[in-house]
Image (cartoon, rainbow, N blue to C red; front, side, top):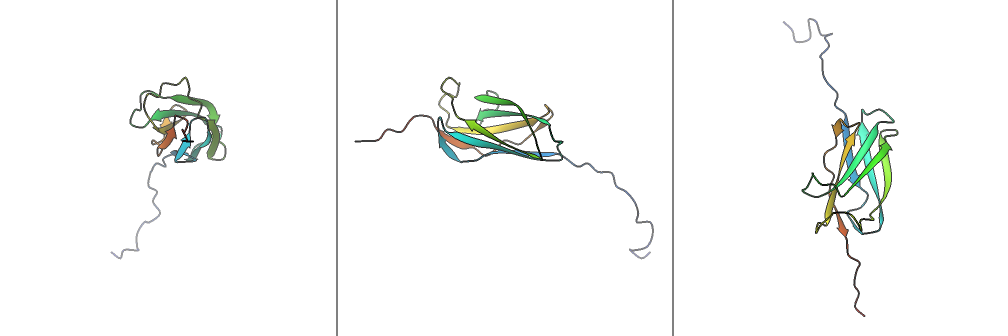
Length: 125
């Protein structure tokens, strides 16, 4: 049989997966500065609720902070976030990542890390 003859109008069931990515606007910053947490999503409905957990790199159990009540609009979110962690339990960690969760169902992969200078600089006179 010739390869282009026969029944070719067949449908194949498949699944389109929703994809969510979170990342920092910068790779390094000082404590107290404002950064942007960006989330990009595909195949996620607008107004889907997001939860963003800020975690020390390598420790996905104890978030330093959690941002709740944000939602996706036009498949994205850009949230201004101030690194005001004076009373937060970050220990001696300096690298932090974001773990995004959509509608308590879909988890984003862990973001690239951001290095945070937690102590103010000391300049010599």
